[in-house]
Length: 333
Ligand code: KG4
Ligand code: ZN
Image (tube, rainbow, N blue to C red):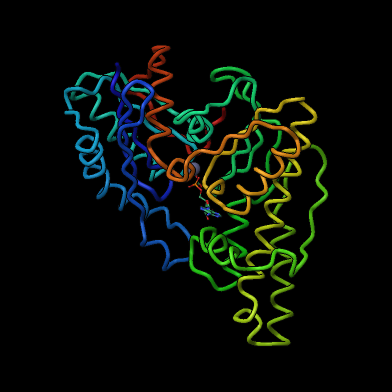
């Protein structure tokens, strides 16, 4: 029954978790509210706040799991991709903890870990499956052939889906991060109220920058004609843009499922917390007879449970790294 400590610090969440075998027994997530005032994550501030939060987060994770430091068998950490200074805090902590206790170190790719979040709770996807990973920095369709055999079969050519949510919400005057607010307002809005274009991108790739620009011009012109336009239409605007982003994502997912003849479909990453996207995936899964998998809310956005869980599977393979390991802002699969 290995006990794995997981550490996540790739962006603006400091998180620590404990897995015993394949069971997550604690998952402490400390968010950084400081960035809201700046309209986006400020990398230098993020690393400073990670430094303040990392030890309390680990202490809390150990306490909640009802284990002691002596029970921990290995330390897994996010090596990348992410903000270099932010990653450095988690990587340095993991290395120091492992060195002091003579424990093996396990590096984890953050994007693989988002996919692995689907293995935290039952039912778990069966291989091969296709995963749509949608976060603030990435939008990928990944073919997962077997354990740790990942192939990116589609990805965004410009903005990520989460970025599209955050940038369009900013146009609406909403604070950062806007994705959850679009979700909130969209629930009482009409998704058919406004129509925004679906980009025609070949293959399984995505593009969101044209949609963002179309949205910007649309809102600008409407506000010029009626200064109260945003106030009067906020819920409908959120519902309409959310629906367009969700349909762009699900249409490509359908194309991937057809192309690879796969009916095991998973969702991962922060944007998979979005209600409109989850509902559309569920509807499509019913129509297409897919078995679909969506992690619980707390495992969709950045969290260390997915890092500890991925660490557990790597621990079984004895896939360890040495103390010379350094974080990577860009990290390939
Ligand atoms: O995976 P994640 O937590 O961090 C990254 O690795 O990027 O994803 C963060 C992204 C942000 O763009 C945020 O606005 C978006 O996920 N997000 C949402 C929702 N919750 C988080 N977007 C739409 N609806 C939500 N409920
Ligand atoms: Zn993430």
